[in-house]
Length: 166
Image (cartoon, rainbow, N blue to C red; front, side, top):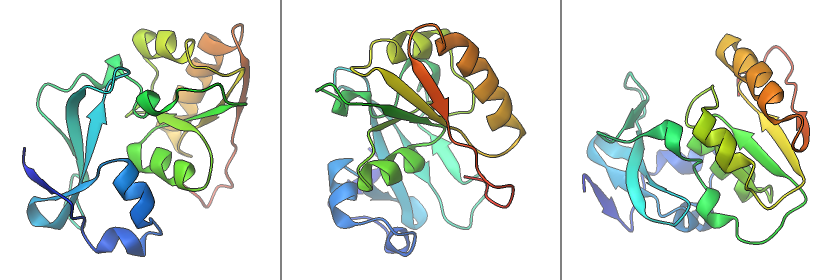
């Protein structure tokens, strides 16, 4: 693996994350002081990782061969029924919500695939809250997800003020 477990880059604490959530999500440090977040499928099997780099473009790199559209990041941590589940675009968004007490999964992108739709429909909840980014891709993804999920759940969404992207 291209990362070292037990350590995380110091800059992630400046973004408001705490040690407990970083430990819960099994985060590590990677090359160039990057944050590495392991990605597990619904059975908790490690299927890849995402690397969040600071001050380097692109910011996010995914492990080779990872099929993001085939999973919901964080689904393996939802075992008991919950009142609602937030669905975000990114892993850090999901971890941030989790840190603040909100059960969440991530699409690892702006658009929900058919497989992700099927996985979302199996979540132990009665409500899904779509928390996609406040950009064009997020708005398109929100519309599509609303049409996929409406008949199955109570579906709501977060509308951010224009000055906020995530």
